[in-house]
Image (cartoon, rainbow, N blue to C red):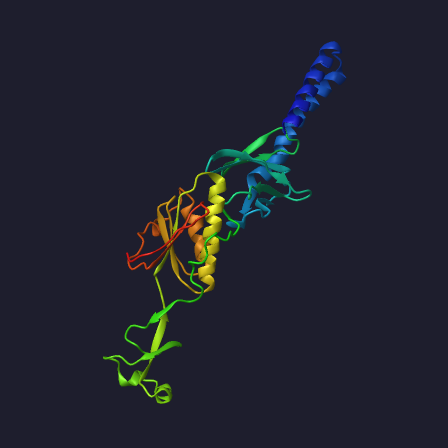
Length: 320
């Protein structure tokens, strides 16, 4: 756009010099035509500027290293469509504030893309306050109010922690309180207080002693992943990558667990992998309304696994 303006100004100056040196009718016509050219540029561009609609689309979550982009599409409601638009988008995340991003226009389309940096994990917030409709000749800009605030979560690459021996190797079960039916059960010797209904008569007959069929149920709300604070992008990628690996491992075994991010002071219950994605999307956005994640770690935690950037990760078992 600035290139077109410079060319137009130089042309006007050249026409003025030509008029001063050769004050003939042709030089007057040349100056008038150049001035009317700017007026026609405004008149032809106004319908498109007034009746155009900007549609924004983007995914909220991307994988680290994936090709990602914010897409702006211009829909025209009048015959004279806009030539192009000018967008200024600022991005802000940890250690990156008010970084201006460039927008690329697709050929022969009213579609614009702004590339998203997906080399680092975490949440980056993209903000746009105004969009400018550029006239046909690129001499003028017509501002349009356009409020946009779009947090983008870049999921870290899953990284296996150095110490996985402490992780459960399957679904952990415990005796079902009050007994009753269960798909999983255990056999044990009869103890005082057991009911006759729980006796496994076939096994008892073979072993010549009373054997109890004890129903089992999975442990629930008894695991906690305590994620330490990180310093810088590299540690954040490492810590969040380890968190993702451990959380997906537990989800694969259908083991619900809680996650506490010390860097954000938030806690959430994770049942499936998508819960972790939703949690990170809101917890890592400093301005998001994530009140439902500002909850204390629940009581009754029996298993705590600490995730940090060190090579030797600590595992503790305690009763809280």
